[in-house]
Length: 627
Image 1 (cartoon, one colour):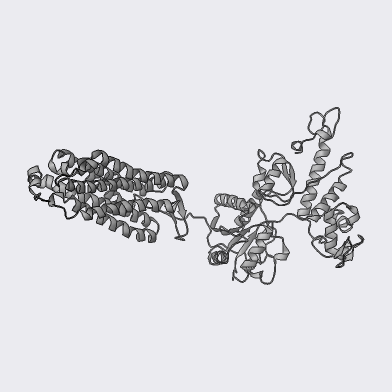
Image 2 (image 1 turned 135 degrees about the horizontal axis):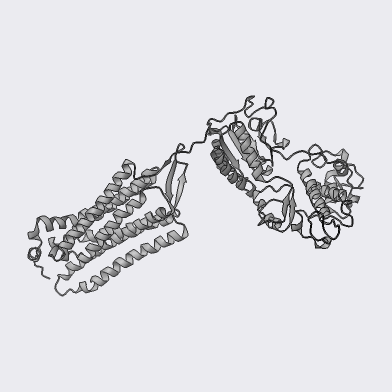
């Protein structure tokens, strides 16, 4: 701003005697955004850049400042909260780098001091009406009485304007240094909000001669400054060029007759930092240019020439309040506001554990499914040379039993505390193993249809779907699901998430889907294969008794589809760990359905009706057919 330019002129003039033969100059940068971090990496002395990130001397070796880092303000705010025993607070911050980094650092340090944060809400000047209403409702309904408002002055003005009339009362506000001293924020409509607000301010200071220097300013002092001419025309409503709409400026107008921010001499806060910045540079240069006996008395090194100077060469008590009896606290209270909680207790976490009854029962059923699948495999292996095993395509049967074991085992990945690997494994393993399972069932269904067609005179259809084609179809169907899962994991994989929105009193540890499209694509592909399998099996249900495999497949697919159709609304509506339990139940129910419907009847014949397990018995049931 113009004020800072004039102050720099004042400072360079004041310290010109300290550096004979040298003229101090300056370059001004406006703003505190990320683009100024690049400038900071070159060389700078800042009077208001408080970002803690600029303290990293490896990244910004030539950056200096005359204002404390945000880290010191954060520590001071924590000490203030600790002093008044405020251990349950809320935070409203802007999305700017200044506020987000400071808020993150505050929460990190607050945990060390036993101070809890009930909520942290970002406020943007572009927030919609519904967002603003939500923010106001969070503040109003929260149990914490202390609210930290960490944002710049422009954001604070926008925030207070929106919060007016929202009936936010009884809160003790703490403010950052950027707005806490701005008296123009106070108004009758904001009294219920800001009354009793506290914070830490940049210290006031008296700079001898500065007020007189500012008020004696004339355009003739800086004849080449377009900014001063524009300022003069704006303040005195005149023009230095002939104009029909305003009077001519003569340059002798008196600034003492004007009342504005420039002529307000009551506070020299940020101004003093500018003064100290020039002071620091001037005295550092003065010390660096000293030379006695061919060496510098300050550094002890060889004397340097003023033309060779590089920027890199220019290089508390406990918290206490004296008197708190005169403070009017938030909500017009004369006594210190008390937080509802006096200590920081972590919220309990919830997830489906092996140790609880539901998790233990589901684990038992998973293990039971694996055991039954293994037992069925052993029975089929013992009777692999019998007609009933051979007639039902033994290779696909064993592959189906193997995939069922994997389906039961993948259920175990859903139980326990979510982690990066378990979140990615549970959905992808489930998707791939189920497709492998349905692919085997689909292959068996097609074999049944082909086998019946092969019994007709002159038919040679089985050569088109023999064992090589069966293996290839299972592989092809499964590879499609593998590709879907790889894309899901690559683009936006599932990840562990702490859900604090569903329950206020506890945190749900869950696996966020990452990409919802990926999740529903996996389920959709399984559903598509199951539907194809059901339709083919349904069409083959009336084949002769020797080919009643289709009936069992039809019934198993009916159970499978029913389970997963009811799964979708149950999955969407179930809260917390019950979401996981519903998914495990769907996996177990559909897996048991396939195992029981397809394999139990055959095991029953092999163990209890061995006389029916003969080629003669099976062939005897085939009625003669004529064309």
